[in-house]
View 1 (cartoon, helix red, strand yellow):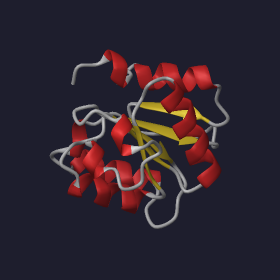
View 2 (view 1 turned 90 degrees about the vertical axis):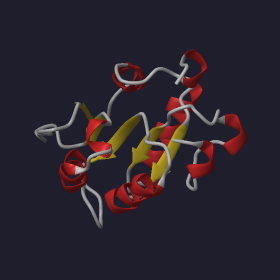
View 3 (view 1 turned 180 degrees about the vertical axis):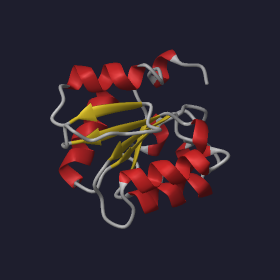
View 4 (view 1 turned 30 degrees about the vertical axis):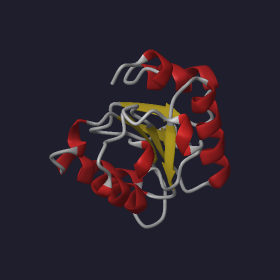
Length: 142
């Protein structure tokens, strides 16, 4: 995502290079969002967030730059993770963005998601999973 497009960002706008792709964290729990943002930022990832699937979908559609990866909670108000995922996979621009489900339901399935992280997960697992799809900004030339 472009620094100019981050209305709900976890880091200051001047810390993101305009071409750097961000991780979009979509979670309705403020503490979880803050923790995910902090862990990712410490590893050099630009991070943006939305509080639910509907806000995230609208944000992506109005942005000039797509996120590099979406971390998506399964259970949220207004639009849950499954609905967001279905709509994203039908959208011509968003369908290729890697989506990682995060959920406390260890039995949850995520058809169409690129990966799933069961909460609670260790920080190393989060970083390794995101790293499969996106390199930290300081190492990437997007």
